[in-house]
Image (cartoon, rainbow, N blue to C red):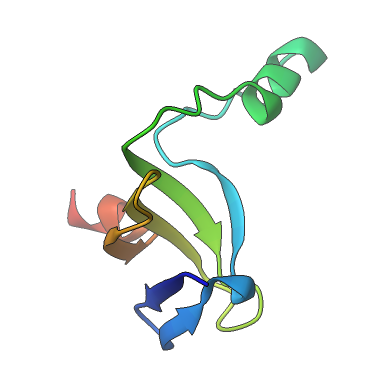
Length: 89
């Protein structure tokens, strides 16, 4: 079991979270084609190593989080609220 340090609820088991996708992959504009939307949802690089991912704490606070972790070792480097980066700029 992996443990994610939720900034709102504290350390929680990974079963409480749901993977949403790559945090750095731009979402297509509204009205995009079905092909563009399918490519956004389903086509992933799935690279090994450092990754920035979107997760939702579905069995806890319900917040969307950016999790920076290593996909090989599963070591979590940072967990921040999804909109925190926007608020800083």
